[in-house]
Image 1 (cartoon, rainbow, N blue to C red):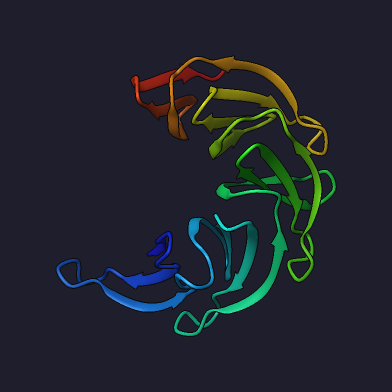
Image 2: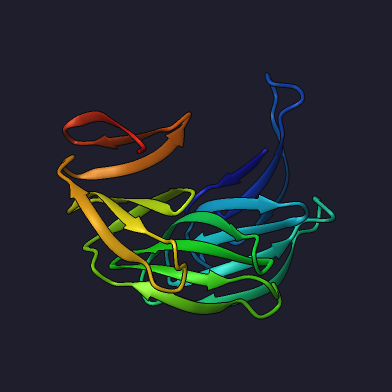
Length: 189
């Protein structure tokens, strides 16, 4: 199991014995940042660091994770979402980065680059996507829907007043959001 443990860093945990989970390795510490989210592609982990960076880690040797690269972000990187563009074999990670959604090209993991951004947010904390649409949990705005048909030009579609929204996820054609107003769900159309 992989865990983004805030100031505890990024951890790989063996949960085969559920009564006694064992930390196999960790990356980062209270001195290096605050790891808020992780997504994995094969032997690569992508991390969001709330202290303003996007990190790529090689986890081929799970007992010895190694830094591949880091990309400075504009604010406080929190949530991550992977986007595949099959027509050109380019991979992107969307980063919920406080007042922005950053579109990071990870085609070359040794040199990820910010391809574009959407900057109309107040406090983005989580992000998910389905097809040509991304949904952002914004603590101040609620749920924000973006059109990512042209990934390097995200466009605002609409905002849903769900209150102070902390998290968002996608499941079987529905968006679910957790906020101070409770739990909300929307069907994706």
